Amino acid sequence: MARKLHIPLWIAVFTWGCQSEPEAAFQSNYTGPLATIGIPQDVQGHILTNAMANIRFATDTIDIDTIHEGMRMTIPVDFENTGTQPLVISDVRSHCGCTGIEWPKEPIEPGEHGSLRLVFNSEGQRYSQNKTIFVTMNGIPNIRNIFLKGYVEPSQQ
Image (tube, one colour):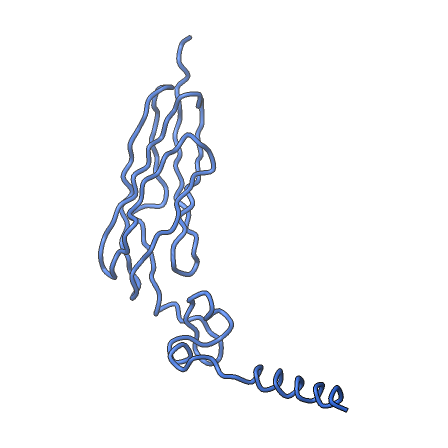
């Protein structure tokens, strides 16, 4: 008889545990399924893009014109946080190893400016060049692209 009482008791415990409410502070700031990853939504589930960080580059296509093979070129890429929240750049990558990138690790406040530093190494690169830089940040969309194009004159070896 004692075993028969355990089953209804466990069912009651699990049912009660599943009905507990999330923290009220979390509910007041974000709602919807994307709230768990920090994306604000209204009660209908629409993303509140005006309540997020946003990045605007001075230009998204950089033309390095013509350079000689073996040269290194440092290129600053200026940007502004045009959103309403601090901008956090979590990662910046190139699709090849010929471009090194430095970026600010501290948050950029709304209305503030920052700069990426690209270093293009043309060693082993020849002719037409089209590189894509992927900037990962805390906005929608969360990945923005910068394009690097130019021509590398082959060395005369």
